[in-house]
Image 1 (cartoon, helix red, strand yellow):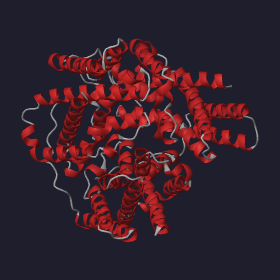
Image 2 (cartoon, rainbow over the protein chains, first blue to last red):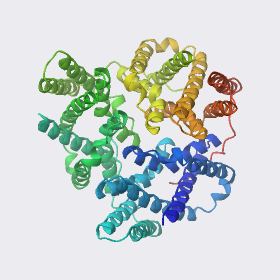
Image 3 (cartoon, one colour):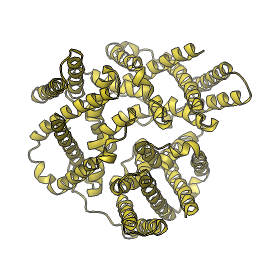
Image 4 (tube, each protein chain N blue to C red):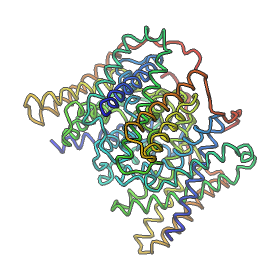
Length: 207
Length: 207
Length: 207
């Protein structure tokens, strides 16, 4: 399983880096800007997770994660025009990345001896923080805070992961179930444009 | 005293989480957005402090801090309409949180063997960083950087704390004095709308 | 050489703090806002580097870095009007800071046993992250992501540093060469307004 998760993780980093590079394209950045935003988006979530858990930051030794982000950024720089024509698949690729990051966040956190509750929180954080700093850096309103069920999918997946382990299911089964639940919840959000009920926005008045 | 400080700390986290949730309400977020912003605002300052001091991040083991933030967010989601009618008390509740966070930041930092100067800096940081990332995430101009004496209150409290200890006063007395000074300085700012003198803002011209 | 690097480092922190304080001036902040933005800009890059490498954050023990940022902020608060009249030299002072931070970031990272590739990345990060959070905090579009060759200069310097060491040149020579290359690349950017080719910005349409 570890190989499969690792492949999905690399896929997730690539997809998240791509989403960062596409924002860079919209903002008219140069290839250095593309690379920086792609790196931050691709590895931001896992980096925060490792800092909070006081683990060695994973890409310091597994440097190919950075290379993957940079290559994705450069490819996007030269190909973004063509990519833009059909972005439907990107939402689905992003959903796969979200599911992979959730399961990895859950699994890594439990391995440090943290509680299941913290593992669920860290799963959400690993999966969403990269996109959050992408939007903050690029001056966009954070998609995460307004988007169809996204963090919610990572939350659901995390609950499934820790519940499965608590029920005595094996690692494999728990990871697979959590991956699929995250993917399905996010997928329903994409297909049906599901939103959680929002607080009615007010007119801002004064300061 | 530790019990009292702990209660004030929980109160501070709750009040800061509430201030985050109210910004989420103004932005029309869903309950997941409310929770994320409330968590970041409530625990952001202490988290940065622990990361910088290389201590274990406090809410990894004391998970009820996160639960408190989430419950506050959900309660605000359903009650914010009523809360909005009278927010005067929130400024004062926030001042109590500010004072509690300042003292805790000072105390924790000294306990790691850092110098009094660093303890004062960390007190300001613990007390203000959560509100800062709340504003950055929500795309608001950071209140901290423009508001009536706020960070200044935390600075005054911290100076009182380390001075009291240097003068040989007991922990209790130092903490109480610092708490009260922070509260009073901030309270004067609220009542009299005190501002530090500002640099005259210029017209922005070009890039 | 260590003394020289240390002096250049202090110079870099001062210049970066100054650049932060000048943004604070443009935003009409009070002296507390000046100090906070100056600190974040001056020490932000090195702080992130130390957190990622799991080293003790350097200014916790070397507290004079903070004092330097605060003094710079206060001086700017009272003198900014006069400074504004001739900012040409600031670009060049900033370039020296950039070069110093790059070499220090490279050197510190290699000393933790990280790979040359990571050292180059950390050099860029040390040199640029402070300016990035300055802009995010102050609600400005990050200069870094749009500016004439800036991160690129740090990248070039880092590559020279690790290449020189790999070729067996001494520490001194490698540091000097990297410092000069960073300075020259950035200087060419300043003089000739060089930009990397940018992605053509699109009209933003919809959400």
